[in-house]
Amino acid sequence: MIDISRRAALAGLVSFGGAALLSGPLRAEAAAGAPAEDLIAASKLSGDVAYAVIDLASGRVVEAREADRAMPPASTAKTITTLYALDELGPDYRFRTRLIATGPVSGGVVQGNLILAGGADPTLTTDDLGDMAAALARRGVRGVTGQFLVWGGAIPYAEDIADDQPVHVGYNPGISGLNLNYNRVHVEWGKAKGGMAMSVDARGARYVPKVSSADVAAVNRAAPLFTYNRASGKEHWTIAASALTSPGSRWLPVRDPAGYAGDVFRTLAAAQGVTLPAANRAGAPGDGAVLAEHVSDPLSDVLRDMLKHSTNLTAETVGMATSEARGLPAAKGASGAAMSAWLAQTVGGTQARFVDHSGLNAETRISPLDMARAVATLGGREGLRPLLKPFPLRDAQGRWIDNPPFRVDAKTGTLNFVSTLTGYLTAPGGRDLVFAVFTANTRLRDQSGGQENAPGVKPWVARSKVLQSQLLDRWARLYS
Image (cartoon, rainbow, N blue to C red; front, side):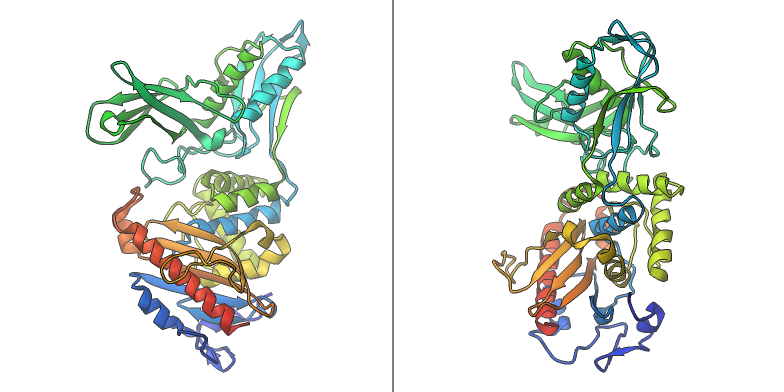
């Protein structure tokens, strides 16, 4: 447990090694390479740089700079979501997707409705649905007398994660209790007589079903690159033909995840000899026999994969499922607020304000000190470090450093003109530190919005990552 109060530390009333924590950097007893301020100045990084470093054994803040400044955490928010979910659901929790028959099976026909009921699994794939269809066929089912229904009400629906992102980015899809392929659809184009041939599918490793719930067309225009609309139960995309100069493909976001999953399952079932009508929506999962079920990997594995690949949909569904399990508001926005209240109650005194669970929304705010305190206080209890991936260090030219003399396991975060890092550092000699370092130019971030490849972002983020590596090297040397 951290042995200082947040207020006392930030007021400079507590000293460590003879140095007080002030609004500027905490001065260390001895220099270790370049002082932090020199490294920051040399980075030529516009905007704010803030950090907090905590000795894990004692809970003491050993170095800090602007540590109480509330900043966008970007994807390091997924670290808090991980702690939130593990605290409530536990590492062995599994998501379940079920096929429920509301009546008995007679003569190979379900005497009633068949419901594809989601359990908020963010990792469900086409191959998983294909295996469920095969399991249904093995039970001798060939059709239904009633309806084929889909249910996505395990968590509240949202059309997207963040409102300020480009319409076509696959990392900002819809959210539902029934998800498929991270709620993305695969679009492919190739040269054909008279233009480009377009196709839409929901490919997995073993199954590649065509999709009828979405379509795409090439349109002769210079801009915009993509357009989207949803009408008559179908998602419609257009792509500027001028951009389709050679064969290619892209995953586009799905805004109607439950409808997409139902469409794909119906096609997969037909391939197994099971004839189903077009999917309609169920108001509830319904009572009845479970004819087939897909069970996800344990939550700890789901979260490890989320932290490695920074999958936004996983963060949102896991966070919302956790709020549901706590009996708290779980809708978009409200679930982030529920997690903020949990963090303040669990760690004590934080001013964090989470708008979402993934950090994609740039309005989310937390200070480096609150982030580091959460990791230091809860990370050991929840087994966080083994879920984080090793952080590759960079030299001053941005090149990877082979075999660094210390270990870092961390979560990165990146938005336009925002670059963040939080995790664990084991210094030479075995001393464990917890750190959070945030860099952000919110003025440039606001100007760029969620624009893909915004001018100036790439070199800005590269400078931030070099600075992060330099600060980690400094802390490893100083506090070994």
